[in-house]
Image (cartoon, rainbow, N blue to C red; front, side, top):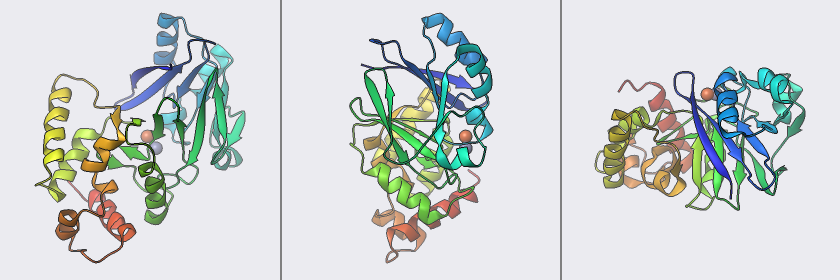
Length: 258
Ligand code: ZN
Ligand code: FE
């Protein structure tokens, strides 16, 4: 069994510690900053062995060097970002299909370009955990800073194919704002209405809406639902293919002021 500790950081980031109790191996996913991570490591008496970066943005790698200096951990990130010198302290470049051991557990690397071109996700298949950075968010997806809508749609299609009970650990608490946009497109979606009610209650109490299951996303996240007839009708795209519908949803979200 892996233990996952969620650490809120900066304004709306989440850092994750993943601890494998038999060997004590511990990973930090996207350490935005070092101090918050060091405090949790000390409190739980865990030793950081490796940092897993999903992409090069500063709110995901900001703690890399300080953590490496303080703990001697290794740093893993995509080949693409390594070649461009975009991940501070990186030791190992990885790509699609690579397997990263964490004690007795292991993560499979999924290449998911779109938000950035080197973006990767880490899937612990045996434990059904997915750490997807800024690719998939609660009821949303990452902005297209480097990749095309087509690339992002291919990446999200890959994630859509994972087991529905997969727990998704994304890197930001954006769920509530995303849900408002989702409701503007599918106001009659009963699953969406119910989830939004839960999400609003959690946020009112300052609680995280992450992680969530892929199954929840499949019925509420418009970016995973381009096949939905009501959604297509709202966009006036009844006959477009899924990738075109996705691209239009992404465009509308970029201009949405909820
Ligand atoms: Zn980012
Ligand atoms: Fe980010």
